Length: 341
Image 1 (tube, one colour):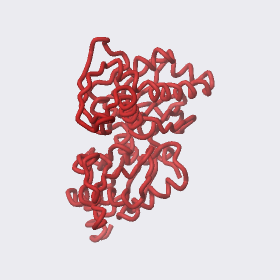
Image 2 (tube, one colour; image 1 turned 30 degrees about the horizontal axis):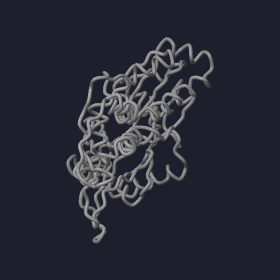
Image 3 (cartoon, rainbow, N blue to C red; image 1 turned 60 degrees about the vertical axis):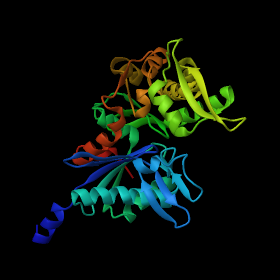
Image 4 (tube, rainbow, N blue to C red; image 1 turned 180 degrees about the vertical axis):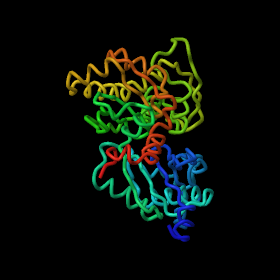
């Protein structure tokens, strides 16, 4: 290796990215997670320029004047607004590269299992245009399984259910390949939407998605105590004035029942389509729940009751995908079969 190559290799550190609907995480080889930010961009519409990205931009949601837009460029786990996504990826990568002195890295990117060729190209193009040397794609449930220490290379069925912001990924993995997968576009965001719609319909109360997300994280439970109540402040739909409503935690459970049922139905469909030997494997080892949705109180118990299969929640479900993508990056020879074309 020549002196110039040695200098270049010193400044090159390969990375893995979980480009999520709700959050973007970046993992750097040898360092672990170096960025974890909301996937949100705030834009000045008059000047056509980015004014905030990530955590700061998320604070703008629902609070912007007409000349500013707070945009989430990913919808259902894939790029919906290419220009804004490219600006976001560029901002995050430049921040990491500046802090860590990285030049033209290789990158592993987690994508939904149901991604189309057009969506795949959008992800690759966005990364190439911001200076990534080469891109490897890995399906999110595969990355989540690796990040959750599942024995994916053995000839046995491993089931992972990854509930993110935009998609729920249900997959069966065996011999380092996905034997069955379904990418359901119902996940954390739909839970938030359901809370908003419920309060509008039942209490004529309008709240924002950020407030709904806070209710979900802090108070939602599929098995609430009947006497638990919380105060929700919003806008009276009829008068437009501020309004406070006391709602029970049982009502929150009712509000999110439809998307929760859709996720459980997807798990049931997977089990129905599996060969008996795989089902026998799952009966022994159980399934693993990852993603932010895995933190919903009572979901593990509900899935166990409805499927009869033991459910394990990943040790840190919010970072399972990026940690798995990072491990695949660090051990490319071992995991070369898991990357998709």
